[in-house]
Length: 335
Image 1 (cartoon, rainbow, N blue to C red):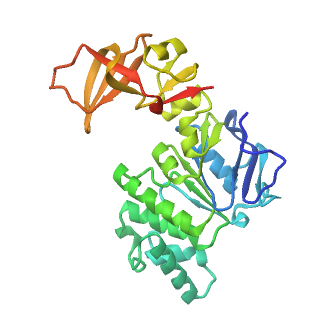
Image 2 (image 1 turned 90 degrees about the vertical axis):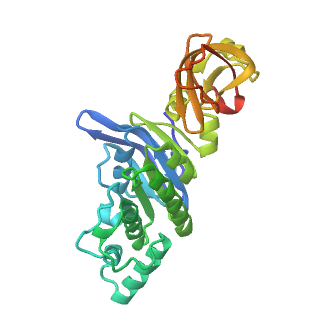
Image 3 (image 1 turned 135 degrees about the vertical axis):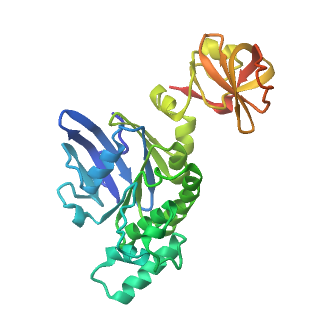
């Protein structure tokens, strides 16, 4: 079992210990231990059904634990009700109140405070998320990206101890997601609020997180800094999820120009490159891509692989062979 830290340690921030979440006979989270330190952003990355949202809901107190515990600053909060944990949750759809204005939605988390204080705080947060002056607008007039920024501002309004983001950008188109990842990153760094960020999007996780936790079938496979996770996946399952493949035994890797340490070589998306002095392989298919082409080839060991090239052959002029080599910078040596 992979654990994030020593189970006896009680550092500041969030500590999840051996968490188990079950829905009837189905185990959605299977013994996960994970920490989020002060000011840290930890992304939980996994495919649909991996248990990442169930883990987040258990941390929030929205799902009961069948085993394990949740701690905050060394205090066990497993049995503490949701509203007393002071954790803020932001879901995929934002869940804004359509009958309230933008400022009214942000200020909702400040109920009970003087009106002037609510208005001031709402204006500060809207400025923080890039929506200065939007306070009087109806939320029904907002774009999807604007609505998510309002939801983020509302989540921050009550100064939560921990921010829990559950696929906050998944309903948006890719261009808008890429823009809002930057907004989220800037906002989280400015506030310093520790954050657990659940997503299936690897680009989001690698762009926004201090550490990335890979989850599969409810199990924690690896927790690491983004660059180290990519360069040193803990095993074939993690590497395959990150987009590596094929996986070449030493002899096949050497045949393609590998001169690194012996072992199982995971070929990344840019791990196989055209080289006139490389190994000749059979071409199966050529597809045009932005800025070039993607060539599907069969390697000497029979494995299919993809090669990106800057040259797009004329339509219908698929070459029979291509000479290629492994680029160590685009590969990983698995333990």
